[in-house]
Each structure stands twice: as C-alpha cells, then as structure tokens.
Length: 229
Image (cartoon, rainbow, N blue to C red; front, top):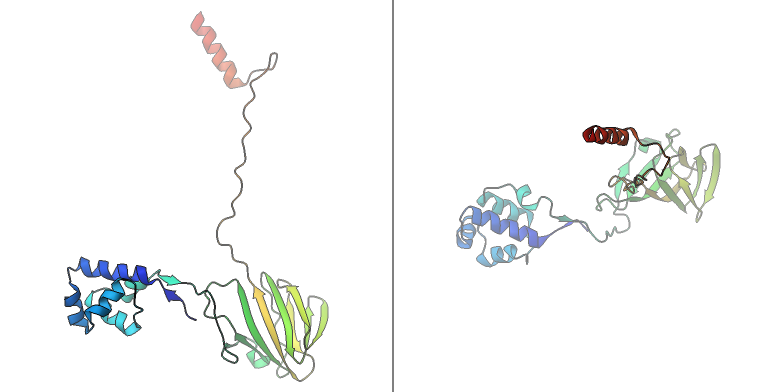
C-alpha cells in the first residue's frame, strides 16, 4: 500500500491555483480535456487523480505537480507484502551469500526494519554488522551460527534470539547449506530534543537578624543612609 494523499487539501490547492489565475471550471477543462464533473469532484476532495491527470492540470494552472501535492502525503496505516514480493536488496555481502528481502519498503520513516535474510555458504566470510538499536532473529529454514561479540550462538529452525545490535555480529549458515532467517531491526531515531523539566530556581530567602547582607543589599543600605544625611 503506497502513501495516500490528503484529497481535501489537494482539492483546496487546486481551487486556489485556479482562482489565482482567474480561470473558471469550464476554461480549465477545455484546455486539459477534463470534464467539469471531474474537476469539481477533485476540488471537493471526492476524487483521486491519476499522475497523468495531475500533470495536465498543473500545465493548465502553470504550476508544478510538486506545488499541488507537496506535504500532502498521508502515511499508510498498514503495508501488505505478498509472499515472494518483498524487494530483494543485495547487500555489500551479496556475493558472499547474504541477500536481504525487505518487507516494509513502502512505509517511510519506519522505526522497525523487517526482512527475510537468505544465507548461503558460498563466498568468503562477510563483514560484521552493527547499528544502534535492537534486533530480533528467527530461523525459518536451515541452521545458522551467530557470532555475537566474543560468543558463538548456534540456532536451528524455529529458534530465535533478541540482541543488542550495537555489538558487532555475523550471521552465517552452519555449514555449506542455505538458511532463511526472519530479521526485525529497531533503529531509534531522535524525533525532537528531549524535554527536560526546567530547573526551579529557589526563591531568595531574606536574611534573618544577624545574617550578613549581600553586597547588593549593603550598597542599597549605604545609599539610603547617605540620602538621610
């Protein structure tokens, strides 16, 4: 599922651009081969235009398509990836038997990265992986070995492990066979500066009898004495 567009805001932008150029509905449709009904529904947020339609409309309104749609993208509420339809992403170690099939490409700015990792015993040892956040691994097929820091973890089909991903780790099949692993990585991103409570400044306590005055108060007292004399 791709990101949708806020149709109400798109319609308002189209109407504003049309009125800014003092064009009627009829004048716009005559130049772009639309119908009045099509343009009216678009301006009222009741129609999802095709990319071709937006391009022709932008030409008539003498503005770019980006001007009409920029900032109107609405994040999807779900993403469905059918079996085998994930985007294959050969990594830097693809020649060494490490290929990633991404399962959530269509969700931008996601916090988690689910993927199917296809491992084979061909090639040389691939480089260690490490990044901020956490990672969950579950063996779907075959057997794998996970070199995690100074430890070696052996996993068979159905086994899983949850790790702190900042520690360098290497995932490889156990032996010369192949293996398939579900990998879910969590990459924290700072969205804004953390909110800290504003430190409370203690109220100044007036000096009690016999307590030395502060320099500023001493100056004020001396000034008052001079004024009296």
